[in-house]
Length: 311
Image (cartoon, rainbow, N blue to C red):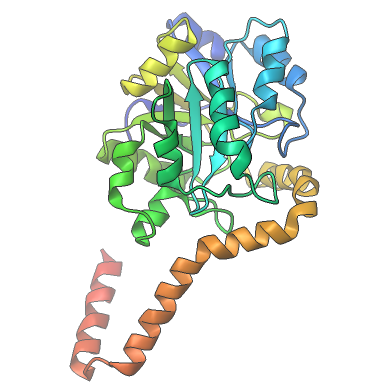
């Protein structure tokens, strides 16, 4: 699969990026305010040392952004949040002001949080996008092709007819390089962004301090407002690489203790998100059992599938 020339799978070099007049920023990073072991202070110090901007995007939470605003730092801070929708996708919402982010959280997220603070809230994707209307806000979808066993992503939801195709028209961007995904998933996300003429973002989805800045979104901007405008206008360059499998395992081990106390609500949320697909599968099997196709049709279907797989 070919991907856009402005999506570069290389290690970011912040100094070189800045010399080109671009601001690099990691747009997907977690702190102790959700399921990370990284403090806000340490994240800010490292971002300043590496010369990159930062969006703290804790799960269903804004207290990390509020804390960051209290620190004296020259880091370009993009107010953000990762909201887990009840039907599966994770929406990355970036606000032009921290005050608007906090207002959105208090009005729409906080009161809809479930038993598990990092699991899906009681709003689906369409409802979350409805509620962000009226705010100066950019809506991107994190890892849109989905983490295996963790969430389906908008691409899987649309393919499974759990969400309508029109959802793409309501998004401003897709995350086309996510540090926690496989290359094949990121390439597919890049193709989706191009097909639907959406902006592109990238971030590490980091939970450990050393991961910060491994994937950056770059834009010709000096302020948060100019940066987000560039995302909306599809004028970004995404640079970064996925984490090796060993590093993903280390990150998973570090995050696990944060999730263990909420095992039951997490499993319940996974079941509820996966139920439509399970129901569709069962109905399909029952229909084939009750209304079997003639042998000739089944043979033709098998031949067609085989030819399609051989392409």
